[in-house]
Length: 456
Image (tube, rainbow, N blue to C red; front, side, top):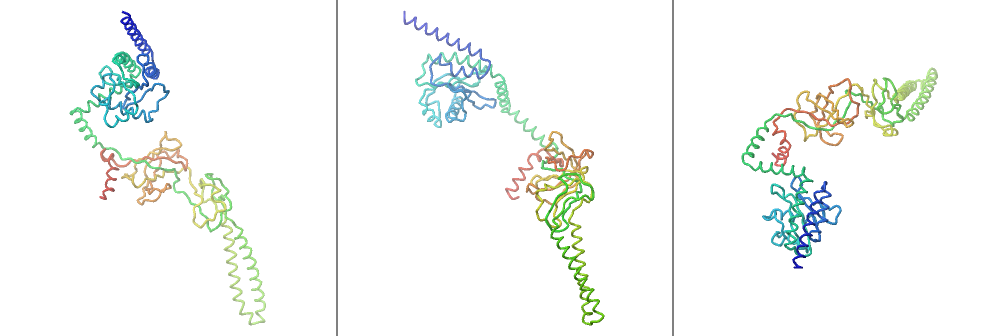
């Protein structure tokens, strides 16, 4: 009688433990709380070495939610990656919906060695939803084999865990069920045929070709200012992007060598004039000196020309603005003390009220553009307020862009000319081309790449 009484007491204690765990599980309002309870408190039902809680995410991928004794499991660890492969294989077995101890025959040759390396006895406990689908489960590891009484107790507590787990993950499993139902509908023959017909029809819908390319706000018909002579930049008199007036001095070149040349030329001219006058005075009495007068006169003329030329060079040392506008150049330190040549671009004079968009379309992205094609510019400083423009000019010869990409230059005039953007702003331009079918719009680049690969 004593043994029977003890057995009844143990059964009653087990029942109370199961009910207590079920109550605690139902009281969990958050997923993390329930996961912690499942992997750490289930040993009250049956002792184990380790418990791993796993579940499917919305896409059907296996996710390790919690591991006993670990605050945050690392899904990239070799152990959990190996365990995920085991769970995936076991979940596809015929008896995956039952609670049972895993044996060698339940695993394939690829993962059985990984399981044997654990040296533990594993218990498979799946979570089953109301539709009979597996939504997750618990993987228990123990150093001893699992008894039938352990499986019986686990069956009750796992059923309670499954119900509570679905409650705290309603949104996840609702979407997962929708995806599952959607996949089932896709497998139906009529559905597949309807989808194919729908795709075939929409491939003929006309859409506008578009291409995105880097762009910059530039001036319309800017004036390029370059040094009139070879020399070295001495000084700038205006700041970059400053407004200047016509005739205002912008920069000057070093004038020391030209000044010296001018002064030496004047002295040489004075000497030549003195020689010429002296020879002219002697020419009346000395016939030989008369012969040198013409030669000395030509020397005087030559020195005059040299002095005049040096004087003109001094006047051209200072470069002035030819019209009102913005003086656009990089920075004063980039030029001062540097040698420059005639025709080299230093400053650009631009009208701030007359701007346009310069677009660099890479050769590989070039499409057919109609007359006055629409362009939409998304400025880097304000990408949420795009600016509309119309294509004005398109180059037919490709050239290297500032990014060293072979591209075509497109000039577009802004629709709102009253409030033009500031010169120099960078943007991303979306250029609209001619209308084509949706099929061509999607497969244009793949077909082009295939043609280049095949050499057609």
